[in-house]
Image 1 (cartoon, helix red, strand yellow):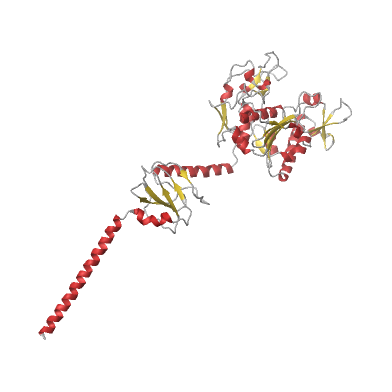
Image 2 (tube, helix red, strand yellow):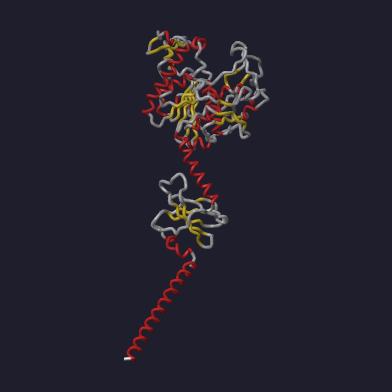
Length: 498
């Protein structure tokens, strides 16, 4: 009996001992596994993610030497988010391997994991955005994304390019008044006259509420690839046309540019001093720039075609026949009128006002102001009615270019002798246009407003003034501008909107 009890106690002791040993082994094994886990390199734990090519991947190459992050560290999971890799200590360029369809505008919660002693890092962005590990790169990337979205939002809003200020810029002018002889009329190239001050060439317009794209010839031509831009208006429209030709070519001779005026009937008639306009094509981009002279933007037709001294019907409610005929070829249209609307001009040209095909009898539009108002509204209405028929067309109506005659008018001794830029101010603060007639006409239509009046009013030193090539005394030209000069800015604002 005692022997049985002894054997039972020994058996129980053995079982207890075996259980203790097993428990000890389990504890040691668990402890060792935890220790080993902490010693295993991180790369081994994410190696499978590196080899997983099933999901979209973005590669960011950046400088990791100063990488710091306050984001929570968590091992990326192959089933969630996008895996990013930062490789190379000296690489700084962001390379996109596969585009994220709808990236958010800013970086949200980003989770990172260090790999291979800090030389490579795995980053998972909950938002789906690529984010550099180091703080400075994250801030820079975030700012770029926010800037993109801010720019997009700004573009959605109408920018008032007419509100801003003139600033001096040593990178101006955009071309040489000496060199642009192929496109620029010598009477407007003030560098060829006796004028000695050229500070007016160094001014650049800076809008207050938005940033204009820097103008370059190649950028313009690429934007206008396979397109035609047409200026139709008076001599100020011709100045804007010549200015643009000089800007696009940089004022250099271009033998490759083709004269295609014949395609638009712009050839000099027998006995004429010049054709009714010009058209030039840049063959590399198939870009055409043209100008057609129409001082009043009315359809002008001889009343008696068989009589050489006949009067001309000035159809106030009809667009110029040239515009009506060639509108389908245009992609950008810039219209202007203004300074030919005076009784002297109409009488000298033998223009008789017509409305609805007959001489005008409406006393409200019989005077010059009424006729001009009626014509501009009629023109805008017609162009606006044509835009749905030509969905690729953008139409602009430019506001009037200001005159600066002091102490008289153009024919009564008026002068513009000031040569100091911005002596009357440098900034336009008002929101309303200085040309309410055109502003009112385009309001509520799809015709865009190219508002240049107020900003040009600050530039009285930029006119031709008393300078000429022959240096002969006479009337001063305080209407037209020296080129390079103010009309270049008109084209920069136009470029920003096309």
